[in-house]
Image 1: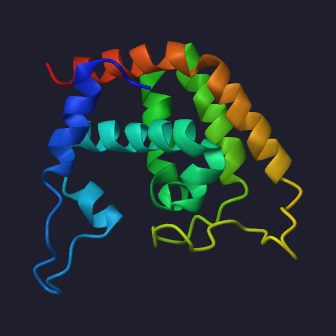
Image 2 (image 1 turned 45 degrees about the vertical axis):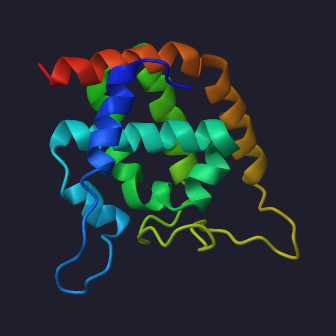
Image 3 (image 1 turned 90 degrees about the vertical axis):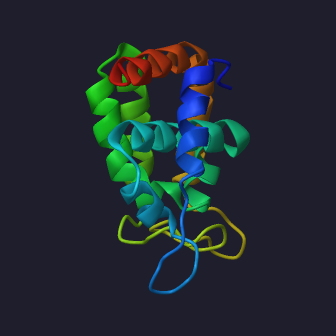
Length: 158
């Protein structure tokens, strides 16, 4: 995944800030957590969640765990900002996946239905094959993208 310490260090520091909602006494929801980070930490977390979720279980896992619906639009903005060839590839992949995601939902964690088209009788929707192809495409080049993300994030910390 990510062997460089800077990106992971930013993420670790960000997750150390996860707080408690003072009104409810409960832990922040994901979106509230992101909103309480500085810009560099937010970028590190959103990029990292995408990368780790996708490497662990494909783009379907990234969506099924609620990250796409909650931070997909932010991810698109960050990818556009990084402006590298590989980030443009990731941008295209993410846009294609998000066409099938209900972007109105907040992250409810695993088990919520974030897809626009439901599974029927345990049969995946027709677009699922495309999501699998896009996952394979990501796997082919992410090792070249990760150092670009690392450089991008480290440049923002100076």
